[in-house]
Image (cartoon, rainbow, N blue to C red; front, side, top):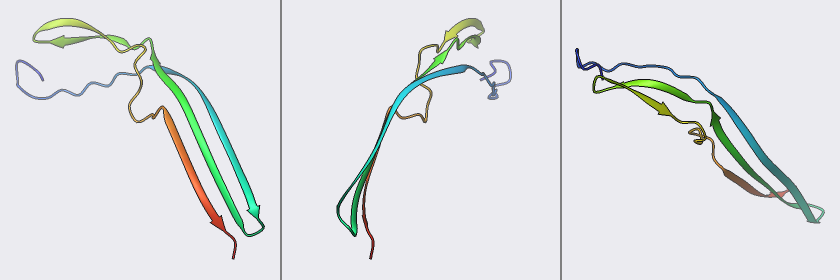
Length: 86
């Protein structure tokens, strides 16, 4: 919030991310018309060098999000399915 006008100020910041992960997928067909399948994903995403200065109550304050996980990137995902071919 701008302390002089009371209005909200939007500021865009950009950073690189580093992601490591594993993904597994498998299926099993116990009988000809029936199949089970599953997937599993694990990922570790982190911001790299995401530091900037921000005005807080009229004071320029350093902010550092380096090493934090970005939003909307889940660490673990899995899916299971049962399929029948009729």
